[in-house]
Amino acid sequence: MSSSNTDVQTQPHTPDPGHGDNHSHGHAATGSPFRQPRAVWAVAFACVVSFMGIGLVDPILPALSSQLHASTSNVELLFTSYLVVTAVAMLVTGWVSSRIGGKRTLIAGLVLIVLFSALAGSSHTIAQIIDFRAGWGLGNALFIATSLAVIVGAASGGFNGAIILYETALGVGIALGPLVGGLLGGISWRGPFFGVTVLMAISLTATLVFLDQTPKPTRKIGLTEPLRALRHRGLATVSIVALFYNWAFFTVLAYSPFPMNLGIHELGFVFTGWGLFVAIFAVLVAPRLQARFGTARTQYANFSLMALDLLVIALWTDHKAVLIVAVIVSGAFIGVSNTLMTQAVMQVSPVDRSVASAAYGFVRFIGGGLAPYFAGKLAAHYNVHVPFYVGAAMLIVAIGVLATGHQLIAAADGGETADAAGEPGDEETAEETGEMISVGLAD
Image (tube, rainbow, N blue to C red; front, side, top):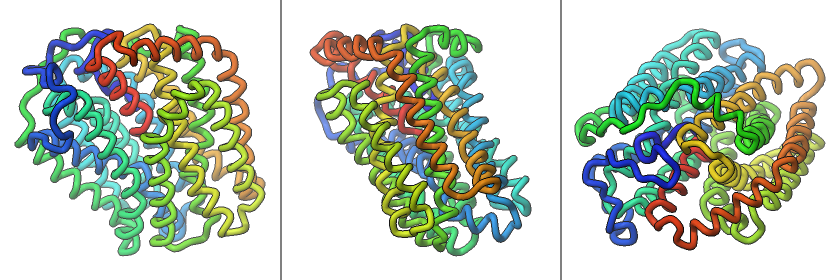
């Protein structure tokens, strides 16, 4: 999502010396990933809650529209304000964490999430919630920017164990978000916001108590480094592809609850199924497809299938059963794309991975932030089918842009194969994988 490993690695394939006792060395292949210090569990729990935010508000979107007398496009600004602020924050999280250290950045993010989620739950107008979601987005960016780095630094069992634990937290959060949002939203639309407040307050307390102070990184990241990194053709190409892909992704996630015409609990169950598909295909299926067919070829097929899925949604938007099944199935394509897009950006970029992920996150979330708002506007001006036609068209554009960088990505795939064979070592390969997971899936 953002510059997630600022404290872990400052140069490609060069371990950061600032990890204290550096548990990773000599223990990468031993011990259970679930036998961890309390500090790791505190941060992992916070990760679950943070990732729940991806689909937490989905079940209450129609209720917000009716109860607060807001148009669909205004309600969709809940996503736009959150994601656009997150995108801009990507440019500064590396600058912040490289100066104050991982724990302080983590705490700052958690405090902002607790504050702004409580304010959102206390709001009386849709405009107030939109504003507070923007502040929430800033806090989430700071938290996600450093959570994996902190887990890796404090975990026992090395990088492999830390990454498995992080993957687990991510999958649980994505799947539980809509379910919790539906259950709490069935009581009141304020429920999901206050639920996040309580859970994140617990996480904040546990992090303060159990997590030791992390050392400051050895290199300070400049404010303009992510923007300068976009001058590189490979990084810019993959980032633009991600912008168009995220337009389609967030059209499905943010707009499809409206034409479903389901209750809050039912919407929660539908998007729980969607979240399970996202998590399973991101963690288990995408790496196998990439290893067998390569990043570019897998993405051509995956984007094409996702475009067909959006066409099904567009054609049969008025048929509830078809719409529900197609939305749940879209989670499989989204899971694969999230992982492969992140692998691609890490492979083709010549700059520090923390800087590359910040630049990538900035561009991709601009697309994700604009899509929900324009989906509401297109539906109001034309009909409910048009936003999904536009989403499908965005995926076709993404395929065309991706084709312009095919050779770069294919060459980078070859380089990753050499790394996996032991150049560099296993710890560094696992560290790179952790960065990919953090950037690609913690949306």
